[in-house]
Length: 101
Image (cartoon, rainbow, N blue to C red; front, side, top):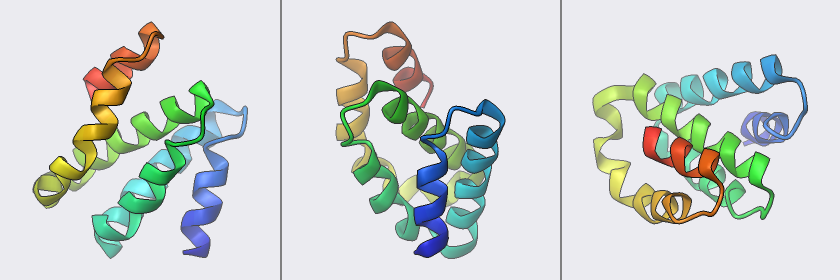
């Protein structure tokens, strides 16, 4: 949990390279420990009403599902409400990121 907390805080930094590496690390933790260990914390982070953080969460989810492959099938329905919210957002980038997820 401490590692995941640190990774989620890294999604908030300005450095793009750090955010990209953090997204990869979150996906690796999800593959190693199981998506059920990562998803609740990542989805909870989406509730922060800051667009950049929400976009980071969407990108992290997108890469995580791509990385874990078939392991993510059981968790798709848990993420659908979050994606619905992203697709209804006013920001074009937000909708596009939600679509790519």
